Picture (tube, rainbow over the protein chains, first blue to last red):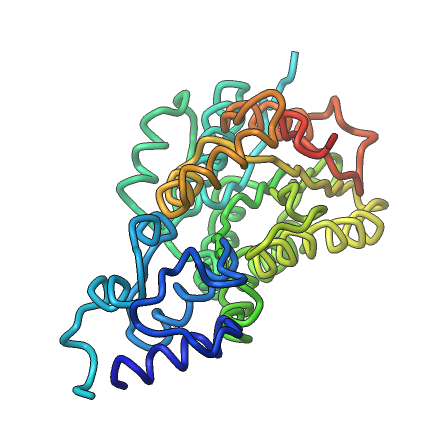
Length: 79
Length: 250
């Protein structure tokens, strides 16, 4: 999946309803972003990339781009 | 004074945490232990801390039922029936419902619940237990009573032990077998260290705050378990004992 597909799919999985979200959207500003959505994002990444992150690792993330950096840019298809 | 002399007690999950402390305390109180865990080295470390007796180590997964059955039968033939069984083996999962698949439930229930009752089934066979006083103790959790976000799989597995233990208590009361559950709050174990390493400082503090007496230690739980294993608890069966530093009082 490419980065934009990732953004769409993780938004659906976590039930983020803000349709104006971009890769630059600051995670903590998303309506409904809480500890449960962090758990959901961790589960989504585990299911799709086989990577196990902790909630602690999410503490220092800013936007979706920083999350993509954490996962590893090389794991995404080119847009 | 609690006395566990002349009692053979089977402990699962004996290589760490509550299982290790139960084994150590029970050996100090005179019991002969048969300990099961996957990790041979850590099981040996528990063994090295026991008061010397005719203890046995079994290195295998508690869900490898054929092996567990064979080991128990051999142990009974060689050294006599069991007077106690403590199921401490358990795995934890923190996942939201949407990620809690049937596979996840099966994995957690296999260790936390199915193995508890499968080993109970083996222990409760004629000849494998002491007909005068046998005590089974399941390590449940306060989360078996209370919900917590992301703990649907773990909570439901620990809750399943509560109901199953009561049914077992009724079914085997006339045979001299008692069955009880211990429901700890958060205690300092490797499992909790792992959890604390994975959650934010805020979430960690929130868990600690929920325990008015602070986080417990495995030895706090071991004392209660050994009491339930002893003849002092001869009139106690089908009961649930919360030991949680006040978590459940809120």
